[in-house]
Length: 307
Image (cartoon, rainbow, N blue to C red; front, side, top):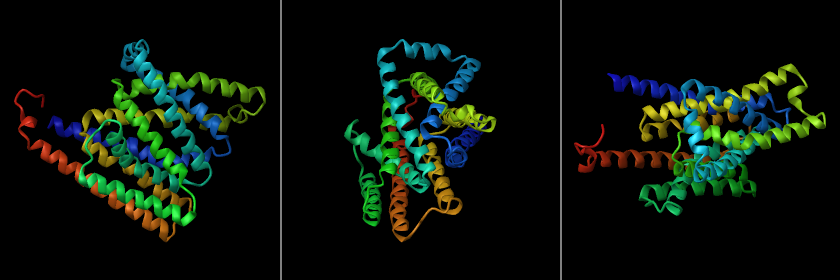
């Protein structure tokens, strides 16, 4: 009974996290009159404030201090901070310039890029279905390149930067929220410097109107709360189940792009996304099969293993 309640709570947290990330383009459309760099800077500052409050309430500041005192951990998290800053900036710019469909594409191909990085960097074995999935996704991107004559660089930058971010965070032994706090601590001095620069030129939108100020303060909650929800979900759900929920965010972005923002979606788009959806379906089935086979091996039922 307790496990079922934990699973239900985890699913609700996962829905909150990935649902929020899916609908976040609506927020950025509301602040598109503000420069993307200012939005990014304010997002970093207010996320730091909100996560600091959360860590104080939960009594997790000792974990932050311990991580800051570890040069190796601090170095990795500095790298992850700039990777996530690149990801945020490209995402904000893409929403501002009516490329939400491309952001959806970027986050759809992200799990497959994780597979590629795992193979190249961590020397993980690429299973047959995974190789087929990566090939199908590559065909999907190739269709878009042939359609437009240009590489969908925003989608690829989002996918690659987030895959690299995930790889770095996989190598750092800290909790998600603790890691985000340190990333915010790394980014905030740069962000504050940029905001002071804008203020010196009287170009700081944050101070221009109370309505804008309130909206931009909310960027901290929009950044931090989904990550906190994700961290809570990760503690309660298996990776396989959590992986299923990750497709919610790009799916919501896809629907917003086509049905709400009326971005162009023609036959080449349908073919490209079709390849990618089939690839993700195969990838998910492969993951479930591997998890099932793993559960059938003697090692997984070792009486001495925690359950």
